[in-house]
Length: 140
Image (spheres, rainbow, N blue to C red):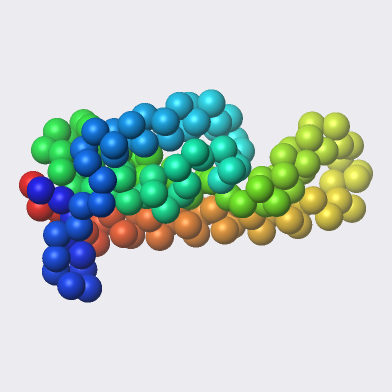
C-alpha cells in the first residue's frame, strides 16, 4: 500500500520499495553526518529534497512497524534542515564567526541577521512537515 493523493484520491507510488530504501539509506548517512546545531546543504543530498521527501512519505505510508514509522517521520521532518547552498554557507559563516566573536561585536555582524532569517525559515518548514504528517491518514 502507499500514500493516497489528497487531490485525486489515487494511490501514489513512484519508486520500487528497494529504490526508496536505497534513497532513504543514502539520505540517512548524510543526516548522521550533520552536526545537530546546524543546517545541511541541499547539494549534499544525492537524490534531492523532493525525491527524498516522496520516498520517506511513501515508506511511512507503507510500514506497519511503529518504531520504523517514528524514525521515518523524524527523518522526514529533519529534511527541512537542508537548505540551498547559499543559505548553508551563510549559516556556516555565522557559526564560524560566532565561535570567534567577542560579545561587543555580536550586534554588528550582518551574518547574525541572515542566520536568524534562515533558522526561522527552517523552523517554519519543520512545523509545516509536522502538520503534514499529523494531517495525513495512513493506509496500511
